[in-house]
Length: 130
Image (cartoon, rainbow, N blue to C red; front, side, top):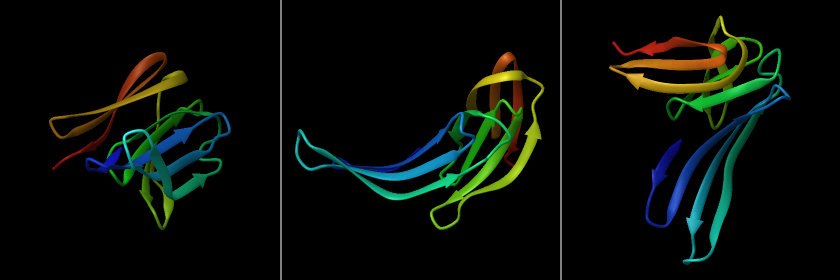
């Protein structure tokens, strides 16, 4: 997720998951000092160990402070993220798809939709704007 962009810098939020069940977030600042050198500064990082009961297979920032994750545990989890608090679980819902291995997210007409793929596919509404 891009927080801020200028001609000489890029402020990014990066999230990652894996087989170790951890959810990791990094806040990075990329700066271009000249045409050939880009520097990367880590502004903050947080790791949520054992974020699920089994391997996590997908994660997406859905805003600058919210993200969703999914894994073999078949739970779609909504997280709140802040620099000071790290990741905080807000809500979770069970998915009906087994062997989950991918996650997509989009917003259509004010509805946040998560697409979960594995042995089948399921669409779950994450939020609805009032």
